[in-house]
Structure formats: C-alpha cells, structure tokens
Amino acid sequence: DVKVTQSSRYLVKRTGEKVFLECVQDMDHENMFWYRQDPGLGLRLIYFSYDVKMKEKGDIPEGYSVSREKKERFSLILESASTNQTSMYLCASSPLYGNTIYFGEGSWLTVV
Amino acid sequence: EDQVTQSPEALRLQEGESSSLNCSYTVSGLRGLFWYRQDPGKGPEFLFTLYSAGEEKEKERLKATLTKKESFLHITAPKPEDSATYLCAVQGDTGFQKLVFGTGTRLLVSP
Image 1 (cartoon, one colour):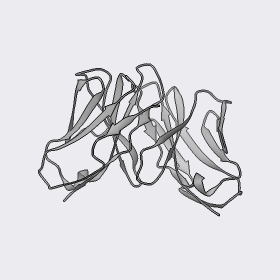
Image 2 (cartoon, rainbow over the protein chains, first blue to last red):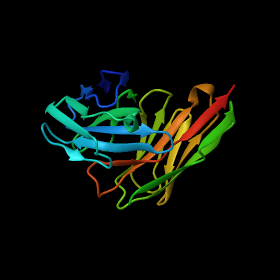
Image 3 (cartoon, each protein chain N blue to C red):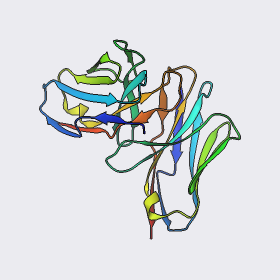
Image 4 (cartoon, helix red, strand yellow):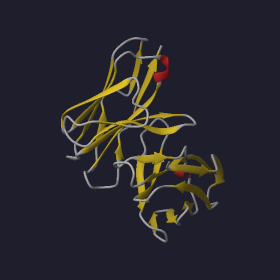
C-alpha cells in the first residue's frame, strides 16, 4: 500500500523560529512535492523534487526552502516562520513517469 | 494558465439521494484529471484519474466522467460515510507533474 508519512501532525511555533517539516515515502517514488492548503485557496504547490538533491520552485516558494538528501525523504524548511505561514502542509509523492500523486496525512502548523 | 472551478461549494444530501459534483477546467494539453476525497484533518485520498473525453471510471457508489471542458463525479445512493470534501485537479503539459486544484465540494450526507 502507498505510504507517505509526515512525522509531525501538529506544531505550534513562534514567529522567527526555523521550522522543519519532514516527509518520508516508502514507494521508491522519484518525485516528491510540498503543498499548502488554505480555506478558499485550495492546494498550492510550494516546491517539488524529481531526484535526490534536485528541487524546483512551485507557485508559492517565497519564505520556504527544501532539502532532499535521500530518495525517500523530502523536508520543507521555513527559515523564519511568520504568522501568514500558518496552514496545513501536505507532502506527496509519485513515480517518475506516473500521473497519480499520493498524499500524506498533513501537518498542521500554527505560527504565533 | 490552468484553472479548475468546482461547484457547488457545499452540498447536503439525504441518504440515498443521488447527485453530481461538477469540475470545470481550462488546461493547456490535458494529461490527466484527478479526483480526490479528503476527510477533515486528513490528506487527500486518490479516487480516479481520467485521461480523455468520454472516459468513465467507477468505484463503489462513485462514477467519474470527463468531457473536453468538465468532469462530473456522480454519487449514486450515497451513505453518510460518503461525507467528505471532494477535490478535482488537472495536470497539463506545461508543468512537470504539477497539479492545479479546485477548492473542492463539501458533501454532507444525512441519514
């Protein structure tokens, strides 16, 4: 069964803190993604990666960075958290030439 | 720019009352149209991928259809456990496996 695991489900961080969101997939997928989901705005792509150490900006990369040191792991980094980054963050993965993208359970981040 | 519009925003049905959700889209070179189900506080769960106009797929009480401009998710004789938000997304040929999502339809099925 497809499994994308986000290690932290609920986090509360202070403004200015550095925040790491971790994601691991066990399907040997080449592609991994980070989305954020906000009411009324739907899911928006922050960054994606199609290979180890490779990354590409999505639609809203400002204020975020990513790291992919191993194929199964994709981390989202908020260098200096701000209140407008309070959101639900979704990690996803897919095979290199496959169309279907599989999502994790999500990480709820609140920045106070 | 690829766009997806879902309607209605919310839908309340009685158990057994069939209905349809709409997903209208504009995309440069459709590579796939996706339906996901999302329960509160959880990530989207994959339901269907449709690739070309005229294609249909079914899973239990759900049936997805596709035309050149829109997709429908038909729900036949729904049960309370079908209550969820249903998301539609498209993948065009301009973005590497990038999905563009609609804002979803919140479905509530009452017993």
